[in-house]
Amino acid sequence: MATTSACKGCRDDYKVTEAQIARILASSMFNAHNTASDEVYARRVAICAACPKLQDGVTCRACGCIIPVVAKLKDRGCPLPGGGLWQPVAE
Image (cartoon, rainbow, N blue to C red; front, side):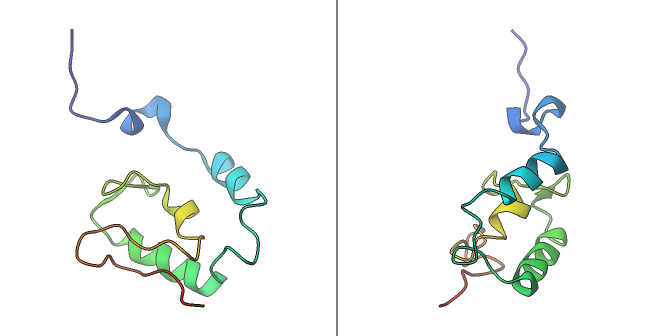
């Protein structure tokens, strides 16, 4: 039996597409009450783009989340130990 060091989410057949991300972001969960402003979202995505834990421009290797989705949710923060690189939006 062959073993591999990569998680299954890192394999090419599990890569998340732009269309899938768009479909997720179009769901009712991403309403004005639950989402960060466009400015906060852009800042979060830019921070993640510079992070060495970002894989393929989409997936966080620290937690496995899909950054374009999680960064849009105002109640989520960066999962990196020590407080993360960005915090939930304060009401």
